[in-house]
Image (tube, rainbow, N blue to C red; front, top):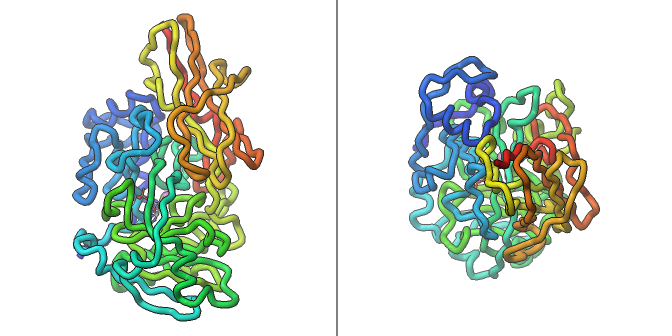
Length: 408
Ligand SMILES: Nc1nc2c(c(=O)[nH]1)N[C@H]1C(S)=C(S)[C@@H](COP(=O)(O)O)O[C@H]1N2
Ligand SMILES: [Mo]
């Protein structure tokens, strides 16, 4: 039985980190007893990976807590797909026991809101159909660490995101096999398989999310990640995947999938993951964290303060269009005064994937403010400023992610 440890806001608040200083942050975290600028509290030595994610690449990850693990900005690499041991982890509750991935085909899922509701197994789902999608998986709080009002929650920088391939059955095929979606359904609602402790109103902690029925065109029930059985850390044995939607909508260890007339009554749907002005609580009337916004960031070189050799420099990064395909990305070395189009490199893995880009520049010794700005097929362009909001969601400001490059 997993031990229940809800991540209270108070708990998370104590984990706030010092202002980002590139490699300097790692040094701070690694040094015991260093006082951090914004809390005055001392941070323990770098935390170890939790047991369920021990196989992650420890050098590549920042362990904020047992349930929040981020990829370091200088470890994104230059491949088109994020290796599974480099993919961030975010759990709202402790994950279920590792036992549930021992016999994946035996996993039971209940499907309702169709003409013929039923309980079925992963083994049976595998007989229905097969598809793959490569897509950006990103936490709504990615970039929260830049918000000046210090929203509660993990102070992610760039690394609560990855581009990965999920394989499974199209949800549409499942719905058709069960006689079609019931009349009046407006949402697809998925329920996570975590054990809810007794004595707590399940609605306050359960991970149950609803997305608009339109997502049925692309949604899948997935059992493979990057060509391997889906590990527990990423929602194995079975996960609902909703390409183009923020991380939270991709329900891990899904045990119930329902086509519903209303959105889930769970707190995580009704008031958490809502976009509200600073000082205002989440509420059902506020926009839900669904669509992924257009975004990009430099991934190399990003060692702030560590000089780069003068001459030819390859500026490398990732760019994605979010809910719409990526169209272009520009790079500035003068803090956004002038921009130059970067080149794509690597594979184009479809409308929901990110793409790697490079711009070769000749730099004389000096200090440069390097920024990247993506645009998508919908005509949306990454804004200069973040849109302030209470919980620090959806940061796609190019200014926040710009870096100071010292060339010597
Ligand atoms: N069952 C369940 N599904 C979940 C979560 C969770 O806590 N429980 N967290 C969500 C959030 S907030 C994010 S950002 C992603 C993280 O996916 P990852 O850990 O595979 O990177 O899973 C989502 N799906
Ligand atoms: Mo998230």
